[in-house]
Image (cartoon, rainbow over all chains, first blue to last red; front, side):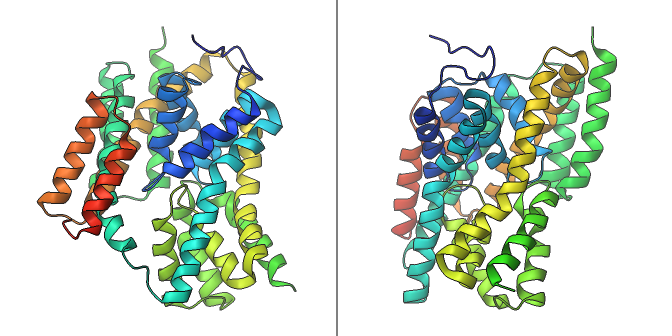
Length: 185
Length: 173
């Protein structure tokens, strides 16, 4: 069964929105983005792979944490203003409580026994998850020299050369969009 | 002025310039909370950064901790809301406008043009997270196994995270 993407209000209830984004936030060690894609695209099938890439791409250009913006945009799409608020609260509830609990433990004991060790392991897994998510997203791209070229430029500039994100984004994006516009059939 | 009001106004302004996420405004957050208002020391800022990274979810929880440090639970709520509300409101209206242009040829060009850059960014993020991982053959193996399992099986990666965390706790990583 494929959900309808006909427009606002779809077939996702507010409760489902809350639970979906709660799951993405709760699992999101080392970044919530791959978990959001997993929940939205693979587990709940609220968005197609291409829709997720489009929404995430748009959210990269808006200020604020991109995954928080994804929650607002996807929430609004299925539930209007209330959906946006509910999805945002779902994403934030558990991380908010966990970070305060960690800070309280740290204040009380002066260190986070074991947490650092656990994070060393989780950090190694998180890299693999983000990378694999990128590969899955790449599978949905058109196999054109332009797409491959701009993907490679973004990867090299940000990943290998470690140039700052904002100037790279605002240089590559207009060029890529212009190229897509000129090549449209 | 009440510290809550100061937190709210400072972070609401920062919210709207945080293009690229909260990491892009971290230097300014540091300047405001350490140098201008002396809410936290340099060392406390670093500790909060580390604690925020240890929690799941969006990597903006450093702001939550600063609010908590300054004014307790109300401070945490106000700081988190202040850094999210303006950018979320903007996203909401941007998405509505975007929806209105569904089917417009220029919108399709924007999406087609942005997609490869978006994916390149995700791959670069994965690469950077790998570089930040502890290193050593155990860590590299965990990264490789996670990548392969996520790509080629339907196993929920949360189990890999749990196993990797356990290996870390045992001091293997």
